[in-house]
Length: 212
Ligand SMILES: [Zn+2]
Image 1: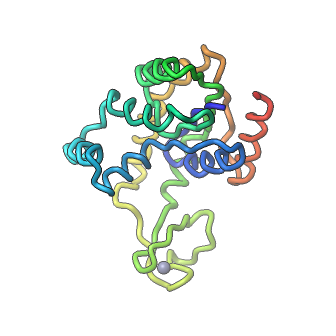
Image 2: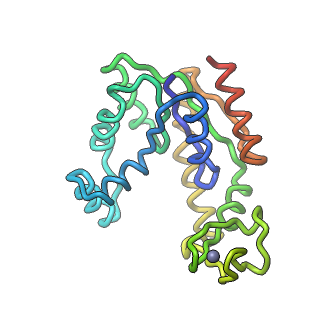
Image 3: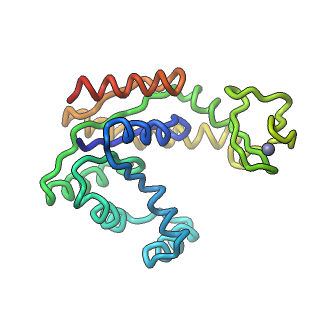
């Protein structure tokens, strides 16, 4: 099975994607993670990627496709997270799959209300002392103090209501044509992304079971 996972920032997509991989025996191919690993371990690719990212650019589609080709050519069952984000990327990915006789079975779109995601992201805090991440809306946190060591929790500086709203609006704008692209190929499944992580997971697995 070949799956693509789409979802807004803060939709809990990464966590769900990994759980789905574990449940269905698919390999997790998260492009963000692959890039970060390469940068961290200083591979040739990582060095190039670092220069691009430091300059504030996105890694170009051709490089991304090369990276993905290395990962998928020997895999029969995998899930892609973080790519494609645009229609040209989806077309390039189709071309790559065709080269290896593969086809996308299912595209899962984790549909989360913009207000809900904004709240989730704005609730994210971390402890400067022990490094743990919390959500002040869903975890049992009092006065924004770390439950294990009492340190004052801090928020990412770019997680303000305005920047979060902008990030989500930009995401929706860019993703709409991509959703349509996969809808036209009858591979898109819309999964409601509200509720507890286990409820969402149940909805995804149900959708996948029905589809296959
Ligand atoms: Zn702490």
